[in-house]
Image (cartoon, rainbow, N blue to C red; front, top):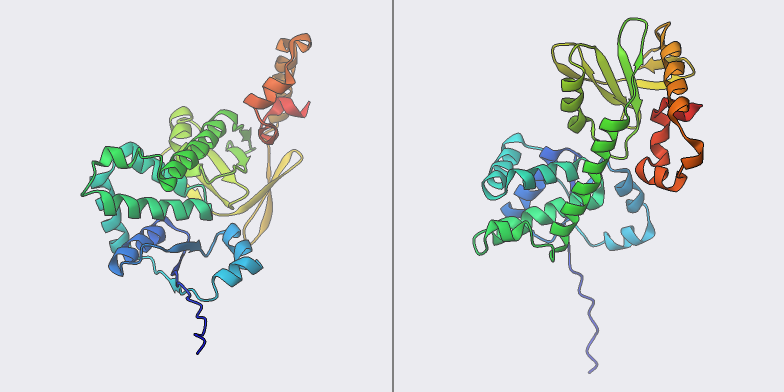
Length: 287
């Protein structure tokens, strides 16, 4: 008799979480709770994930897999984070947080795999050799993603420009590649302690506001409209700029032109140091 061919399907669980760091740490907690270490990570809020789930290949791959909604639990997340603090240096923990702020599905997967790797090998190998073992794909990816986010943080700190409104508020609209607002708030709080300011992320629809006492998170919608700033949540209204703001803007442009030596311009080097996507923040680029 001919033996019937059998197709063996290896089920790989899919953990779906709410896009928060708490939710991602809860995925790690559940993985050890049920000993599920080969897991695919997805976020409800990830645009990349949404696009991939609608692709034919993803639907085909996920046909026989088990999708599990992981509920965020502060207690579970705190236990995982406390265990990571006991096993990793402050620099390694900072890297994990930076990578999480990339908002990338690929980065979320590497954070999960990294945590699994650290916890499963911490007893048999020294920790300092684990978090520097760049032969492991997720350890290498964490270092690379952290460098990307750190570079974006540095550039936002360097290129953010404020506009003074009629009520004395200094306002800046930004759209960084990564969610770096939590990383840059300390820098601006130290630098502008005597001014009220608001840095608003147009892409993620939230901002950080400093009221001379503390930093608060604000949620609204805003976009630049000529010499005004259009802001709105449930209602639409306009924020007028200070009467002298246009004068200061022109003074800076004149200063830039006066020190610029056209014969010594190196556009290629200039673009390497200041990529074109950041020119929208610079007054001198609107000459």
